[in-house]
Amino acid sequence: METKNVMIVGVGGQGSLLASKLLGALLIRRGYDVKVSEVHGMSQRGGSVVTYVRFGDKVYSPVISTGEADFIVSFEQLEAARYLDCLKKDGKIIVNAQAIDPMPVITGAAVYPEGILDTLKAQGVTVDAIDALALAQKAGNAKSVNIVLMGRLAKYFDIPYDAWIDEIRQIVKPQFVDVNLKAFELGYNF
Image 1 (tube, rainbow, N blue to C red):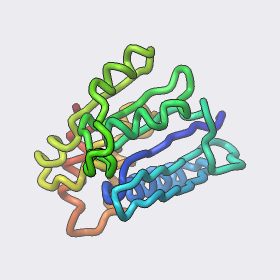
Image 2: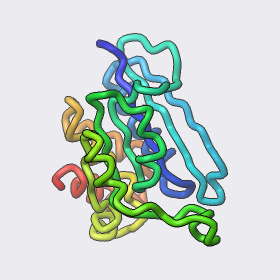
Image 3: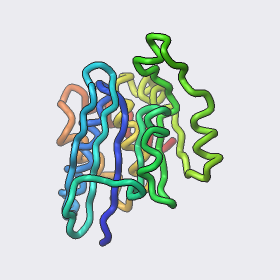
Image 4: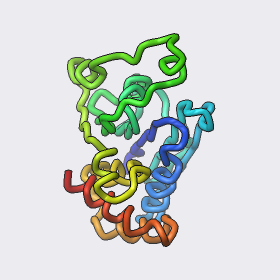
């Protein structure tokens, strides 16, 4: 199998590291060679966080370069736009429709761009936008946006639904399993 590349992008505190851990563990259990690399940029202050997950028969590097990502899973709109150059020509962006103001916007030094998703679509990008925050709240915890997005990503993978569920049970702390299973289901069935 040719190597597939998934970028998980967001801001600090959104759970992108748990999402990459879930995806990586699931793929390893399915028999793939997997490389995961995390890049933290001021994550403790709401800065950008990027995780690369690469899998296939044999993966030599954990880094995804320009034009290599099959999927970008973005926890908010601006992060999707920020990493657009990494997407393959026929790649897909799964994006939480939520907008989270970065520090320059909060301080008044910049304005959050309007119409990001429309701009991406106008460029011919396949955008699967989902209100992951609303679905996470419906599941019972706003912090489960990450698992809602993993549920949406699962629709594009040829991996049985039950395998994802089993992995969530293995990875997530026991007290949060039920809400995360619901979040995954909502994202999957959106």
